[in-house]
Every structure is written in C-alpha cells, then in structure tokens.
Length: 535
Image 1 (cartoon, rainbow, N blue to C red):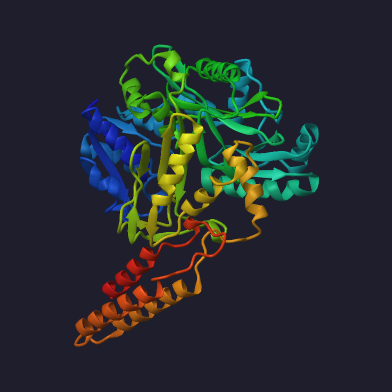
Image 2 (cartoon, one colour):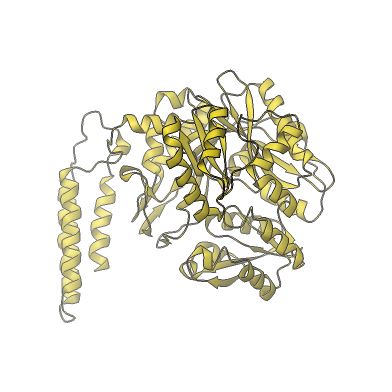
C-alpha cells in the first residue's frame, strides 16, 4: 500500500490525510464542484474531480470514485464516515477493482448494516437486545401487520429504518394513534437517505444512557475493545456531545459491556475499526442497539485517553498487520476527554442549517485542546452536505478539568459569517445536570423545550445599529459609480469605523447575562470595518 484515495470530504478527509502523512503514504482527495477549493483538496498530495455538488452525482457515485482511483493509480480507498462508508456494494466494488478497502469486509458491512440482522447476531453471541420485531417490514407490508407487531411489543416504541443511522429514519411513538404517521415519515426519510423503505419496531426504554464501545479487530482473530464512550447528549437522536470514560459506567459494568461488544464482533468475523452501541437502563442493565461498521465521528476522544491512533491502525490492519496494542491499556483511560460537534446550524431558529461564507474563524488552541476541522476563513459551507465543520475536544486528568478546559476553548471559538452551535455548547456545559452527569438520551430535548424559545444569542439596540449602518454603507459603496467608488470606499471606511468605535465603546453588560452571551465589542468593530472594506 502506497497511495490512499479518500472517498470523503471535510474534516474526516483532513484527518485521514494527516494519518497518511504520519505513515509516509501518499493521499488522493476527491471533490465535487463546490468543494474545488476546500481544505482537504489543497492538503492532499493529489486531487481528482468527481462531479457536480449534489452527493448523488459525486461522493455517492461508486463508478466515479473507482475511476478517480484508477486515474491517480491509488491502490487503497479509505471511506471515512457517512456517504459510502457503510455501503457493502462500494466495499465489494473496491475489492473487485483490486483496491484495498480500508474497512471491514463487504459481508460484515451487509450483515451488521441491517439492524434486524445485527440483532440476530447479538442474540447468537449471547448479548441482550431491546425487545422488538425480529423480522423487518418491507414496503409491501400493510400497516395492519406493523400495528399487530407494535401491540405485541407495547408502547411507547420506536419505528426505525433497517438501514438507518445517525439519528435518521427514526420516530418515537407514544400510542397506537401516532403509529401510522410515524411509519409514513420513517419510510419517506429512509427512502431519501438510504434508498430503503424497510423498517422495524423497537421498545423505547425510559431515560436510558447511550453507551458505545470502540473496537479494533485484525485479520488474525484479535478483537480489541476500548474504554466506553458516553453519547447521551443528543438532539433528536443525533449525538452532539460525547465523552470518555462514561461518568455513569462503573469498572464492573465496563468489563461486562466491553466483553459483550467484543463477543458480537468476534461472532461475525469482524475486522477493522467499528463501534458497538448499547442502551443502559436506569437499573444498570445494558442492551445491544446496533453496530457502526466504520470509523466514528467521536473517535478523537478515544485517541486522547488511550494514545492509540485509530485511523493509523485502520490502515495497518487493512495491509495485514497484527494488532499489538496492550488490551489492558485500551480499557484503562488516561484522564478524561470531551468532544463537542460544531455544526453550521442556528440553535435559535430550530437548528436550521447555516450555509455560507466563513468571513472570519478563530479556532481555539492551547494545552490539551484538539480541533479536527475541515473549514478555514473564506471557505464556503455548502448546503449539500452534513453541516459538521469541526470536532472540538478537550482532555483533562479528570472530568472536572476536561470540562473546565472545554469551557475555555468554547470561549475562544469565534466564527463570523455563519451561525454555529458554539453558543449551545457554552450553555449546556453550564447546566447543573450536565456538570453532575445526571442526564439521559432525552435530556437535551427536554431542557431545550423548557427554554420556550428563549434565544441563546442576544443583541442589544446599540449593536443592531452598528450592523444596520454597516449594511447601509455597504450598499451605498456598492452602488457608487466607478468614478466615485474609491472616494466612497474611503469615506465609508472612515465613517463606519468612527461610528462603530462610538457605538461599542461602553456597551453595558445586562444584569445576570453571562459574558459569552454578549457578542464581543471587537466583533462588531471588525464586522463594520470588513463590510466597508468589502464594498
């Protein structure tokens, strides 16, 4: 193996490129039209265009990815996560083309990618699964048959897409009256996201924790589980904050749950990196949920507490090397790590995507902070893809220190031009229930609902005036004739700078408002200057 084509984009493509550099391997980036100048494209040793911006015409086109590998003479493919990472047909096509697929076998992907087949595999391995329907319901099955299955399981329950993942293709049902609409919604979403109408039903546990176990497995029979990750801070089943080790898992439970994860992986002959996900109920019983047959978004925090390069080991396993990581070390966390997923979303408008140009970006740094990002100042955040722009992680000797460092990093994080979830994380980390780890998978949705629409970011009258005048002067300068443009730009810059200085010189801090809830004075001055100069 000498050259790896990365069949992905954004921050995960950057992460794999860095692993290639560490190992002395060449990297090939692929890009759609809107990603032509993206960070991962410029970082790789080579780059290859694969089509229009729409994923269905670029990152999801197996033929174009294989053609890119052929043209660049790559001999291996890393799928990252998302897109085709858990697509058995893609893994099989790579193998047929003589390429090393850096992931599990197509057979393992197909088996564990089916939620119902994965349940059967867990049962066969002696691991408890959440009560549910053991046979999937296809597009041709009538709703009456699904309703009969729901009655046998009991309410409340979840309607889930067999091919689902990442919080997609899932609806909660409180009673029979809500079942029909949930079925239609899941089928529609699953068809769009996964091209598969098939669904199944599963009992909904009350206030569980979401605990997952990272695995590495080589081609020589070794299966290595790592210390668990806590993934209970979710918004509508989508993880937003992860940490390791879990504050809700005892050493005894860790031994049982990691042993169960290894048993499931071993029973299906799994290789490469993967993750077994569990729900842990209020009585401390754990239940198999699903397996992700790929690298997880939250892998950095496991790397931080174990010192193991998971991406590097994916590559080493793919080229036939034996795992030589100490098993005890993998299960013994060195300190504590927390990760926040920075999305280009606006928490104050129902988490609507916030595509656009990043006009300014200051990424936090300093001791024990890691930022896995794919964005840069001046970069465009496209509307076509998942809005994750960065994964911010902090390490500490214990949870309290890791939290303090994450709070410090979030205060330093500055993004202009788009909205992000940074204000949300600043708020969550201050909540008493989060600080004491008294949460469950429904916690975040509950506390957001209790806010009753209260904004996370507020702007006072003086600050609104600055923005309004900046916009007005920007428009004025743009409309100026070519003869007056230079003069208009000079006058706009001077006038706007003076106004911004006066308007933001002594902004009062409202009583009880935290510092991070007020936009920094410097931000408004900088915005005013930028708007005038851009004109």
